[in-house]
Image 1 (cartoon, helix red, strand yellow):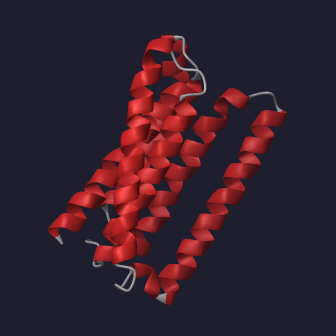
Image 2 (image 1 turned 135 degrees about the vertical axis):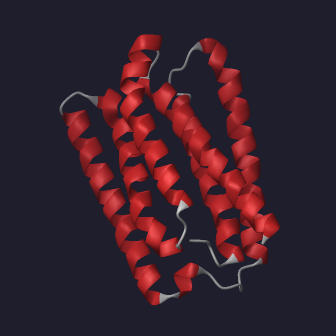
Length: 178
């Protein structure tokens, strides 16, 4: 499967770049002191990539997009809102049960899972890889954070931010080759 719309590649760059920035931001909750500058640099680079994607998206706004097809748009909207509701409800329950350290892992798991449904929306099998990466990061981060004696949000933020950043760059490369 291959993405057919150049605007969608540009949007990948913008959206994955933005959410990479968001995850790197979450990583800054309480990382090791000597990690802060690197997470900050990663955040800055993610922002630049996001802005490049925004620029490319705006300059190709009239180009076709997968989401021009009503079935694809409807599925996208359903998956997007389901992710928000399930993620928010799970986070609420974790906080209520005094397990807030697992909120970042829960959100990463839900974000990863939603990519499985978006594969068919965008006709892009590479989203399976992103789904598996995000879910794996969500699964390993509680264990790794204990082993490294650092907050879970630092591990999950760095891992998820990196995975999403790689897909932002992949979107940019695909845009440039289209």
